[in-house]
Structures are given as structure tokens and as C-alpha cells.
Length: 432
Image (cartoon, rainbow, N blue to C red; front, side):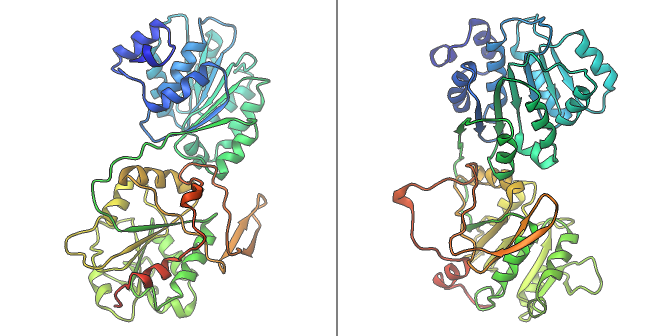
């Protein structure tokens, strides 16, 4: 029960109970006391774990009454739909009629929203770009903000609106900062470093139970697309190991880019399933690929493609992750006719870590992270869009800041490392 586990006022306890939330979730148990106490926190937890309800309850606990001269709580979310969702949740849980909530987002007249703010707002829920635009028109008063909240922060990073977030945060002299996200990574860390100082990091895993048997998984964490290309070429160069492999990308255009990035000697053994370009080597079916000895790598675009029969193919590369985790998981499920042991190798960047997190939650296990090969050429991207290349050392340290990746306990650490190819040889993969 809420009253037994958290110090909420009677009005809020009645509200959450009437809303059907009979007991607090883990993320609420671990964050609400800190939120009410005014601490800066970054919270990582799965979709649907109760993050939004946690900060709404925290806001309602800290705002005793409304009708202040300026907003006290400022909440940034990525989309109009999320703005409306948060406002609807406030309407369900807030029984204090003096507290006024205003939403700011595109697709509605800016003048209408300026008028709403002028009429009075205690809580503002907004998308970063619209909030910044109204702030620059002097229509948004941030002088009295007590709580600055960013929800779905990973999605905000994906949209490229982290600069307005940082600008708005730095326009507030002093307040509590709360960041909620599904996964923590480098780009998000860079944003929060601009306005947060030593926040507490609270991580809630929420792994589900694995209901199906899946292929062995391996994950490579790389900084960018061009490094992915270099890594794929490096791995596929070992023809003795990678005798038959499927490489999944999201679009046919990306399939062409991947194909054209390969060295000429490798390219002769690679084809695209239903390519865009007539001059590109292509195949019309996965069955044709399985029977052709001269083609050992097939690139498949998720675009316009339905399920494919992956039985007996020893290596399954995900160069890009599909947006729908179900597509990835369906490919990983072992079937009765699949005699060969397949190894699924996934490449991920910061922007795909939230998908990795969702996959891990669905399959009920962490995906093992493999160190990048020592000879890999890593492309470093700079703010001026210039790039440099460097070869990584034998042990590449990639700062992930939590999220999908975690520091191992001393008892679980190992002082050896096997590449995907070495593991394949150890497992005695069948040659095709």
C-alpha cells in the first residue's frame, strides 16, 4: 500500500488508489523520497515502469497550492502526444483545483499558448523547441521554477533538441533537476553535464522472463555509422569463419551504402536481396542465397521485407536495429528445424541503445558486450563535422554511463576475450 511505503498526503493516496495504482512500482519507491527532498536525479528504467507517475506525484507533493505569479514546475517531453499524455495524467491524479497546467507544442497557435500562459500556469508541460520559441518571445517566465524535469530524454536526443533543453535549463538560476530516460549513454551525458552537477543515478532494470529459446547474442558498441562499416568489413574479411552470413539493415539505400563500402575482394562474395540498383549484385530469395556457394554474405533491408527463413545460417548480423523490437526477437528465436547453432551479432550506437534495452527486457537477459577488435579503424566525429580515424588499442574503453551496459562485479570479470569469429571456431560452426 502507498501509505505504508511512501509519505504521500492523504489526497494523493486517494487519487492513486482511485486511478487503479494500488501499490507503488520499484521506480516510484526508489525515486519519490528523493524527488520530494529536492535532490537532482537521473533515472533509467524501462518503458511502462512508472517514471511519469513518479515525477507527477513528486510535483504534486512539492506544489502545495497554485495561483502563483509564475510556473513552479517545468516539464520537457519530446512530442505533442507526450505533452497531452502527461497533462491527462495530471488531471487524473491532481485533486487541487488551484493548480493550473498548460501545454506548449507545435500544431497549435503560439498566440493561443501565450494567452494561456498569461492567464496563469503553475505547471508547464512542453516540447523543447516550442518552449524555447515562446521563452525567446518573453512569454514564458522561468524565474520561479522549482522543478525542471526532462522525460523521455533519449527520444529528445534522437530528435536533436538537446540544445534547447540545455538553454532553458541554464536560464533558470537554481532549481531541482530530474531526468527520466530508458537508457543512459554518452550523448545524454553530454547534455546533462551542461546544467547538472553530481546528480544521483538511479537504475531500475525490470528484465522480463525469457519465454523462448534464442540464438547466442553478441553486441558491439561503436560510436558512429562509419565505424560500423569498418567493423563489418573487418569481420567479414575472415572468410574461413564467416562462411554464410546475413546482414540486416533498415533501408535498401543503407544496403547499397554497406555494399559499396566493402573492399572489392569481399564485395565479390556479397549480394543484396532485391537491390535498388540494377548494377548491384542481387538475389531474389533467401533460398537462392543458401544454395549459392560463391555468395557467402547477403544484405537484407527491413524495408519492404517480410519474415525470412534463417534456418541453417550460422551468422546473423544486425548492422542496424529495427525500430520494432519484435522484428529482431522473431529472427532470434530458434526453430525446431534449425539444426545449426547461429550467432547473432549486433552493432549499436548511442542512438540505438534504447532499442537494445527493450530487447533485453523482452528476452529477459543482458546481451554480452564484446570488445572492439584491436585493429579496428574507429572514426572520431567532431562538432565541425570533420572526421579523424584512429586504430583502437587492444582494450577499448567506451564510456556508457550506465543504461544497457554495466560495470561487471570483480568476481565476474575476465582477463580474456574472444571475438565472434573465435567463438564460432570454438563452437565448430558448420561450413557451407
